[in-house]
Amino acid sequence: MLGPIQAVIVDLDGTMVDTLGDFEEALNRTMADLDLPPVTRALIERTVGKGSEHLIRSVLAHQLALPEVTGLANVCQARNADTLYEPAWQRYQHHYQRINGQFSAVYPGVVEGLAALKARGLPMACLTNKPLAFAQGLLVAKALDGFFGWTFGGDSFARKKPDPMPLLGTCAAMGVAPPRALMLGDSQNDAQAARAAGCPVVLVSYGYNHGEPVQQVGADACVDRLDALPALIQ
Image (cartoon, rainbow, N blue to C red):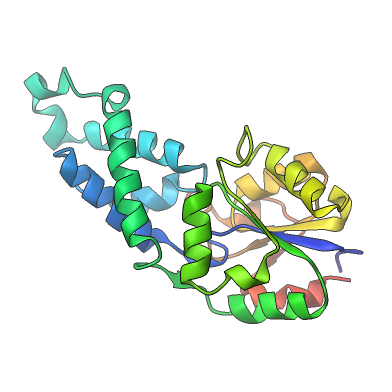
């Protein structure tokens, strides 16, 4: 049992919503704009979770290193991850804004779990490394926004998870001490941020932990569905 818990902070991508489809669509439209090969879901799953800037830089570096691209020596001399980042970022924002939520799905047990937590009177905040505008749009698109009194994105604070700053800022906004605020996420980013902030942490088993087993992260608990969480909280 975890507790006493006075508030719950919930990650978004890989925890509440399977957004790999959204990332894949937006990134592949971006790659097409830049005349680069399409990305694979495996690459996205390994690189997502540390914010859109990190995702785009990682994808660009990977795609530019592919044999079919490096073979174009005369082109590659003028095309590298640094020079392509700004146009890639602009195109990615353009595409993601238009498809946000269309290629994603809420995980089983999420609505039931959030409803049970809300019924117990626990205030909840959504804290994600996704840009705030995208996070707010996705929560509305999936009818999850009504569960949260606060939403913070990767651009809401000066630093992103796994830095503890976002969790500490969220706790301050909610008026709860970190040891009484439970972090629910899907990756080592969430666990490391929670540990550094002094928050207890539970991870779901199905998310995007950079391709590594989430059970190895060392959270306080791991659940297969979000609706299993209320039973663990005092």
